[in-house]
Image (cartoon, rainbow, N blue to C red):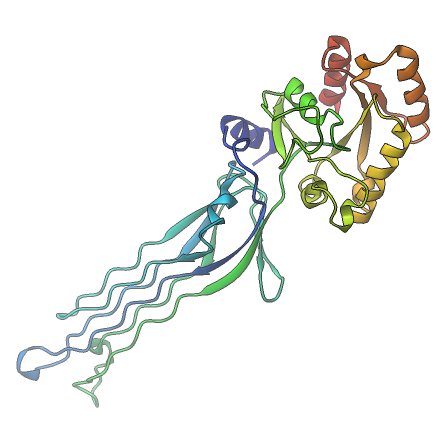
Length: 334
């Protein structure tokens, strides 16, 4: 599944802005137990006729574009499969336990809790993966007949289903990542470029979880504001940086109202470096946001300072159509 298809499916879901996004959970999955085999005999002990038990139900995971699906584990942290039905008389086999399909967001990694080993990663919408196989059904005493044992009085118990305690960790699949200090205008810009309806206000930490928008079949992720010391646990943004590890381009927003835009830039870049040395190797476009709020001389002064760090520095305002169109052209070509 390519990003354009994923983008379309994300666009059709309007759930992700309604709740704080849960992006990491610990869950115990238990596949169903196999049904026990039956030990029984025909009338007057004329021979065994115990049937086999049904197998336990498997547990599958299925990838969808709804990024809020880990929220289902905010209260339920255990998923148990359906058990197989025991065998019956007259060699009747028990029914198999019904399989369970658990829907997860695309981009979810499944790690074994004990070994920290990656079990599987859901990378495309519609992908289905067998996570836990159900237990085998037990054999009835009919199956244990032999020339030397013509009347076995024993049957086999059902097998245990596979159990896995796992960590489900979500990494959003996006093309562009909006980063910057709190109140740098990221969410407003996302709303302007896409059909997203991210909450905006003139105070810090309005965005409490990542927001997604779709720009011409490309996904833009708005990451909550980083602050100095984020990598040590301050603020909100560091816990969401994993969501932009796979993006192609970083859109680094710096407010034109900042008293020290160069320091703002360095603060975010340092936190990115502490999080992952690979992060700062990504292509970056610096956006001087809210450029309509100061004069052109002030904007040019900020651009001159920031161009010592990057050649790609663009003044932009959601109230300036031409600046938005300039960014649109760049995004189309990226």
